[in-house]
Each structure stands twice: as structure tokens, then as C-alpha cells.
Image (cartoon, rainbow, N blue to C red; front, top):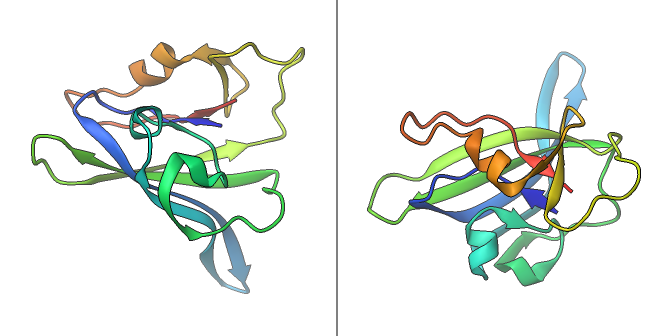
Amino acid sequence: MIAYPICPWYRVSAANVSIEVSNGKKSDFKTLWSARGAASDKAARGVFAIGIPDDFRTEGTALKGRLPKGFYVSVKATASDGKPTLSRGDWVDREILPSPPMESGKYVTSKGKIVNRQWVNEQLKCEKGNATRAARN
């Protein structure tokens, strides 16, 4: 489950999970999963599951197998007032595991801090358009 920071006037329009793949001196990104068209208000507000088709109307790239220990998640968000689409990305480290399991509505940041949804959204400076960290649970 991903909890992505989003300003109140934006809605998630697409999400993507990728990893960096090196080929000698050159590196590129490989898409592991992609989807578009949030299917629920929860997903549109930035809380969605990776690889589960219920949160998005269209899955572009289906998740094959398990997610790696670390990956990038990026989100495209479209403004309800006609502002241009924004894209933001962040690193997710699945090796950071809280103990004991987290309660509902709690997420762990890529630095291991356990936070709630309000904290996640407060990381985004909406008036300035600066994105910071996504969190996962």
C-alpha cells in the first residue's frame, strides 16, 4: 500500500513502479507495474495498492512476481482546476519493516518513521508545489 503526498486540488491520474537497470556505463529504468485512471476516491487522493487492479481502471503493465526490496514509485496527478499535470517520484525500501505490524491508517517512510496520512500530506508544500517523500505501509 502506498500513501503518496498530494495537494487537495490534485487527483492521482496514473502510477508507475520501476527499477533502475544498469547496462555497463548506461542505466535505464524498467517498468514493473503501471496503471491509470484512479477507480476510487481513496486512490485518487494518493492511497493505493501496487499490483491490485481494483484501485485503477486500467493496468498498463501488470506486476509479474513479487516486488523487489527497493523500487521507485511515481505518480501523475491532474489538477481539478485545469492546472497542468504534475509528476513526482520517490524511492521505496521494503527492507525497512516495523515491528510489531502497523495498525490501520499508519505508514512507514523510506527512513523507517511510522506516520499517519496527515503527516504524509504535510510533507508536500502545496502552495509551492514541492514534493517530498512517499510512504508505504
